[in-house]
View 1 (cartoon, rainbow, N blue to C red):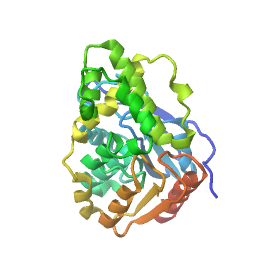
View 2 (cartoon, rainbow, N blue to C red):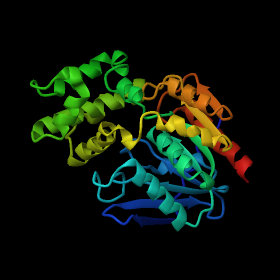
View 3 (cartoon, rainbow, N blue to C red):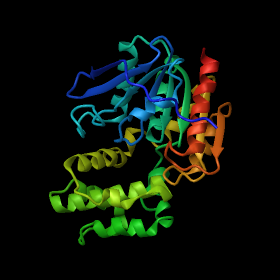
Length: 317
């Protein structure tokens, strides 16, 4: 069973100028002359972490990480103006051009998988391959599952805490509309109360048995509010794409090497999404991990992801 590669430091970092107020943090590590790979983080809102460099053999890969607009080290943090899917795709293409990369491998998870597939559909000629984990197809049914019509049946206690955090006067039968209205409302106490409850809910569903609520019992900072609002900014705008757009665009990706990795116990993005994507991409390698969940952690998931990057390195060299 494979484990992460040793920790490494970037050999270069910079802020990408986007022609707007957004400045996107970009870093490069590994082998500058190796196989280019770009890491697409989830969320939308989470940002990259140092361990994300460790899925790739640093002797073989030129590893590019970037924090999407408003995330991580990108500036200004939490900014929603000009923060939408097409601009994220445009930022990726700016990064590729600035680094003078002919083609790169897309390594992605959750919301990052959505972004990877959409980028590839628009800029196929610059994509050498795609690895997607925890497929998120950004359909209405995917949002419905996570926000009150599926996952709430697995964690009803945590869902009830979210409902109880909403102001008494709102319609809790329209739970997500009420969450949106509260977060973008003027009651600062209610904003922070719902922020805490949403963070607890989303962490519980993503982490499952690894969830530790005590880590979120502290003070709710403005950064936390901004992070939750960014995640839900995309949700309330249907991720700025048409219904079923991701799947419908897969017809043009049939000749790109693609690996789909999905945990059977993924309750953020149920395995149906990975299965449906595999049907739209019949030539892709589709791997279901029987004991893994949503996050890119745990021995089974880490082994599958590192094996995937090693296999892709053999194919792309």
